[in-house]
Length: 507
Image (cartoon, rainbow, N blue to C red):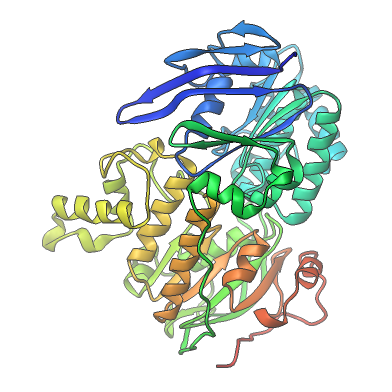
């Protein structure tokens, strides 16, 4: 039988970590093949080996039944292999078209690539403006760019690492149509995702990995979420214990907030009104790029352009306050961009802890080095972060493990108000359940929590109220017991019957 890709006993050892332990895998032409495993199981390392970004220590790669030694992504693309990484590889200062052009054969002109991007994006229903600079894009929009870039090469093998982590349900449906079209034309697809429903609905075959080894192969359509969870993490994730909120005073208030966009491609905020009370979780849904990032920047202090009186924290006017002052008043935040905003890639986890945990700094600004390391070690153990220790650089962690660390760092600080963007982006089902459980514990302890997420299932699971952001405007709030997926989906298009108003659940 002909195989598009065959891996034979692939092994990769990093200092202190055996990422891949004699991994073997076969993918047929036209097959959508899932690779499933918990964070740190070795999935991303294996994909990087196939794409030539990482060299294996031993083992053999065959492509179309021919042994190959793929020494770089350039050689991989020449063979017909494309990859969409979980952490994007885009230059912020260049446009979308310039980024795509850099990775392609230079026989194509920039103008030609610009036209092709527009055509492919239109064909597959992926909204991408080739002339926009990448720094103006949200995480979801950057992901679309990566997908379009991969499709432009007409790949024989397409590798997707968490492709739907920041896509809306509607966008996921469109992506699945695209992937099925590609598979029907003979393109093989390696699909990494922690969303078990997606794998069962989309994929023809599934290889399960644990601790760097292949532990099973199944037809996911014949499995349940529970059985896949047991194969992946050894057990089923615990069910969340959620009780009615015990509301306290207003912690964060936004009244009549209007903030113009920073650049021509940004989103202006229009008449934003909301109240967030102690002891509740307010979820904000919406399609990526509708102003969520701009709102979180204003609330966290990254964008200090609010007018006096528009943003208050425990009745303190914080519209022009720095992030440091807001943290001093009890507000912590988790940005949607892990590397660059949530953590500095080259710094150790211990030093990244210091970015927001200033309680580790002693009198006179002296660092309590052992205290910092001890605090970081506790975070690693409590949130089950797979890392070699407090000295491990942030960039050495898998995406899901870095997310667990950043979330853990802010939750462990026991803030009075917590702002979170995409809390479980890229984490496995067990870690997602843990993070959501920790957020509910924090809420039950009296913390006021604002969660921006493009995962509707997540918002319905943990939120007490829901609002929707569309075109820089905020919908009325609806108690979770009165909300429906259909209603929220309609509101995502900006179609609500009444102007945005301040509303909250009654105790």
